[in-house]
Image (cartoon, rainbow, N blue to C red; front, side, top):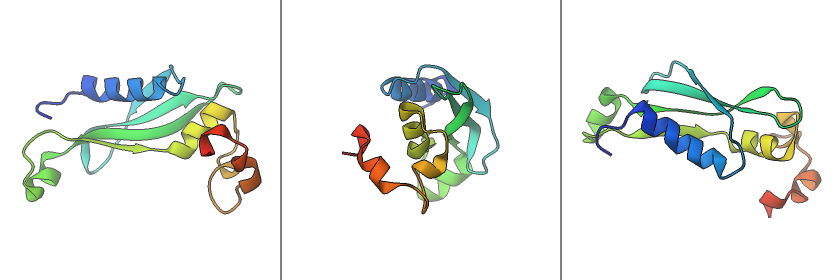
Length: 114
């Protein structure tokens, strides 16, 4: 897209997470060597009230895109979907939903996994 702005980036993520019922997002500036500006996204855990990181985003730097022949602004994001699952279903420990220690039987009962 031509001339993307921080407003476009934040609006895209706000709309995406609102579709999952997460309405209070916090965007915190963060360094990323491939994007500028760059942000970490945080959402509030429904039970603990704790802010947890649910993704990161930015607009790719020109020097990253130029070798690929791209001459327009491009959004970048990393959606930590396991963290979104934590927020939606109230899991308190990421190991419950991700990694070698997760309980697969527990996850099979979660609606979104089906």
